[in-house]
Structures are given as C-alpha cells and as structure tokens.
Image 1 (tube, helix red, strand yellow):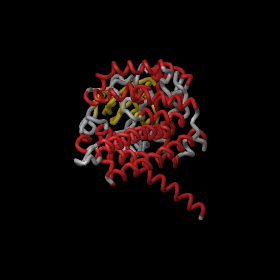
Image 2 (image 1 turned 45 degrees about the horizontal axis):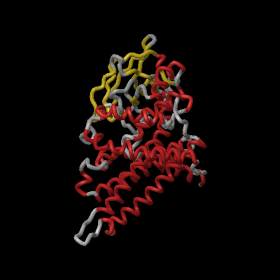
Image 3 (image 1 turned 90 degrees about the vertical axis):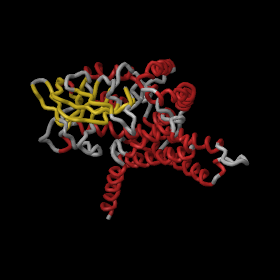
Length: 400
C-alpha cells in the first residue's frame, strides 16, 4: 500500500483549504440562519470561482467534465471540503449526486448520459436517489415495497419513499423499485430514472430532522409515487440488476461519507484545541486546556482521528487497486469506526464550549444535529458489525 501524496494533490488540497477558510467558513453564520435556497445566489458565485480554479467536480471522470481523481486522492480533497457543510456542494462532489454520476457513467445509455449525466456533472441540474422506504428496514436494500409494473412501453411506479436527500429542487430521481417479483431475492429490483416533474411523483414534505426541515439541496424528502408513469427506456442498467448496481454505488458511497466525516472531525478538533487554549476558567488566568480532562480529550481525539484517517485511506486504496468487492471488510470497518470517532470528537468539542456549544454561534451544534445520523444511514452500525463479524468467523471455520 502506497500512501505517497503527489505534489499535484498536495497543491490541490492546499488551494482547497485556503478557499474553504477564506470563502466558505465565513458564510456559515448565514448558512445557519437562513434557508439553504436563500444562499443559492452567493453559492453559485463561489461555484463559478471554483470552475475558474479548475477544481470543479474533483471525483468525476475527466470525459464527463470532472478532474478524474482516484478515490484515494479524492479522500484527501474530501477531508478538506468536509470541514464546512458547504464544501462538497460548492466544489460539486456532494451526495447523492456523486453516487448518481458514478452509476450513470457506468450503466447509462448514450441517451441517458446526454439527458442526465452531462448536465449533472456541469452543475446545471441536481438529482436524488429514492431507495429508503417508510415501512421497510433501510439496512436491507433488497426489502422493497415500491413496484414498477410494465404497461405497454412504460413502467408504472407505485410506492412510498422517504429520506430522499435533496429531492427538493432536484431535476430527476433514480428510483429503486421491484420489477421482477418472481425472481430470486437479489434480482427483483431495478433502477429507473424518473424526472421529478412526472405526474405521480409527489414530494409530500421535507422531513424535519432534529427540528430542522431544510430546503433545496439541504433537505430530506418524503416521496409518494402514485401511478407514476415513465418510459421503459428510463431503465438504468439491466432489469433486475438494481441491487447489484446499488452495491456498486453504496461501497464507494460509504467511502465518500467517511472522507467527509474526517473533515468534520478535523474541524471539531481544531475548535476544541482553540477553545482549550483561549477559555479562561480562573482569576489566575488558568485555561480550559490546563485541566487533565480536556488534555485527555485532545490526546484521545488526535489519536482516534489519525487512526480513522489511515483506515479510510487504506480502504480507498484497496477500492482503487483491488475493487470494492474485495475491500468489503475494510468498508464495513470504516463505516462504524469513522462515524463513532466523529460523534465522539464533535461531542467533546461541544462539551468544551459549554453553553456556547449548544448555540449556532459555532458550527458544532449543526454537526451534532445532522451527523448523529451517520451511525444509521447507509446501514446502521450494528448491521455492519454483524456482517463483518460473520465474514471473519467464516475464515476461522475454513481454517479449522
């Protein structure tokens, strides 16, 4: 495993860090106080700056208009961007669009790429991914109630989805639906492209998360499909291969999440150390950082962050070199290790800020509200741990 960072990537990461510090972090008070849609004009100005810097869409293929970085290279970029909630959106490598670009690039027809992929990479449109269902366990993507039934040259879709991130303002959705109910479990579902203006595509609401409903890209929607009719040419990939394609998407997708979480870890750690050095807690000038408890927090956070970073970069290297399937164990590990590391570091930083940490005067309360879900989405921690343990135990049975 070679983690050597090229001079090119070091330069790119340095440019991104400077941009984040000067152009994006100063926008956070406005981001926390307003609806996301109200920030769109200024965010588009920042995106134009990113395009001029030739840093647009770092992880997307060059032939589509991106920078074509490897997963390992993008991991370093993503950590820099993850320090602010605005980073990935402004540089146009945000979920769920990043995953949708990947599967459209791999499985889309020429017509689908012209209609959906190319404008998506340019930033002309946004997309969403409708898989999670209200009454089905999100940790098991083969359990779906949404159906897509053939009628003439069309599919007619009926079902109830939620936590469809960024559906508000999206141009199209990639929908997971059962097309082959008589097939074996893993060959029943398909992915279908559905423009959000299609009759029967009903965005019921943006779901309030920890009291915040959000808007536009910064939201999670409940979607009701009621006799939603789209042409069968909107099928993405072969029929019945939805689960297989989803695994192609979710493996690297979990890497993307972990990379972003590392950026959040670093930002929270920076705030923790800054607070420890500045907060005076006695008339003699003693600071918070002079207490053993806070020193322990700093030492533990530094070592846990570095361990999580190396584990994630190792997983990215494995996917780049041996493929996501063979990197399965490592992907499972980072999902729960990095999520829990992030939650711990954010919590320590918030605790060190006392009452200030509970307010939106810093970014910490936002991280605390919105990143608790990291231990749930893309498979609950407990599911990843169980799956990993079973695979490990199988190797011991074979050895015996």
